[in-house]
Image (cartoon, rainbow, N blue to C red):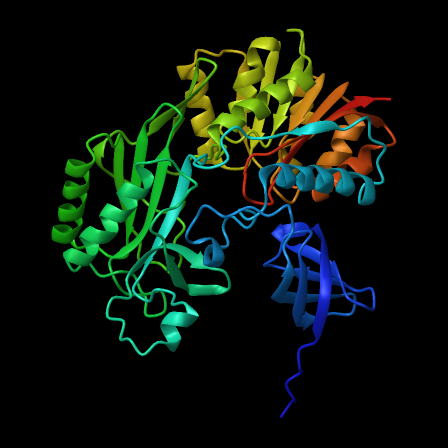
Length: 469
């Protein structure tokens, strides 16, 4: 039998930085990095190590000798256990500084790129209640705190509606009030949970694959429209209709009330039939007079207000005069394409998700925009000589890829056709830096602008303008 390794204890260690994925950084006496999950830069702590790697440790602060002046009191009662808003205990001005620093460091360290003077990160006016979409899960095996586990009290009700505990796929943290989505989000979620408990609607058990109530998806648009989609594990017409009728009576302002019967092993809705119970099967977002139809499966930037700021920066960087052919890669539902269309000769959008392209086409028709075209397909397959011959040489390429960045073949094709300008929008500055490094022989970075889309988290967007040398 292998002996269990005794964890190392490091005393009086200063936390010196914020790192990737919301972790903080300290250094062990031997110089190795320690990644921590429960500290703020500036704290001085004793650390118990967990995982030990060749180049670093992972650890937890077990004693605080002094607290950082960057700390602030978390507003959420669930902060200690939830893990969704990892930086709630850090002042917002410090969050912005670390995000800006991360972007700059990635571009220089990973991409070895020459940067112009960095434009300060654009902070978010709303630091809480900024998300337009939230998803919550039901469970009949609520996650218990250590205090609850160690107490001798018998816990009868283990039903919960909230978020998965990190690393525990079958345990749900019961959430009373979440500070990420504006009301009536909390009221709707709590009403559904309470109705389920009072009326004996079984909460889902992921291990046994049993129960009735499975998930809730809530969308609240910037126009005030509300979409609720409840996922049931099985059909029980009487209980389902009782819940949906009660919900629509309690919240008559719900624009779209829909449901799903999903008996498969995972919660994803993209391969499921979503059934309309009451109202419309969509809601609308609006931006500069443009309307965007949002369905249960639609992608839309999660922070509506800050998405507008991001798109304005993108349009400004593109610097369109009205005569340009613009390619918009990874166009999603065509939001950016339509946002810049009035300043371009024509815009061609490409996206791999067919449903998103259908939404893009419908939105363009709805907005009476006639100089945009949308195509579904994998970028590395669609973006070829025949595509360019059909649509013309692009003057400007706008690209907003997923976290993995662009495929190397897409980068190679961009370099081959050499558009005058490239605007690269990224939610992952590490893969953005990798892609930009492949272009640095032909293109220079003219501007870079980080944008905070997700306050209280470590996530950050970055926009880079490239021009031919």
